[in-house]
Amino acid sequence: MKKIKWTLMSAAVILGIGGAFATRPHFDCSNLTQYYYSGGVYFTAGVEGVNYICTSGSITCTYYTTDGVTFFPCQAGLYCTSNCFVRSKAH
Image (cartoon, rainbow, N blue to C red; front, side, top):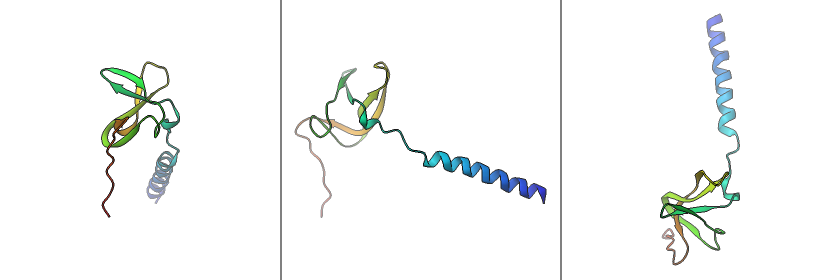
């Protein structure tokens, strides 16, 4: 009986810890300065919706940095500045 009790208590603790990690807020990088990668160099992207948009796609559209040296992916999609074709769902 004690083995079952300890097993259930251990499972409850593990599930509780896992649930806490699953529900914590995720980091929002969109409030930081955005950069795009072109020709081996990172450039300032500007303001989304004004200077560029990220169209649908599975590659990285924009990046962010906290130290100016290491860049991390932020938004997925294709970086586009003009004449962007955005697909809409057919009605």
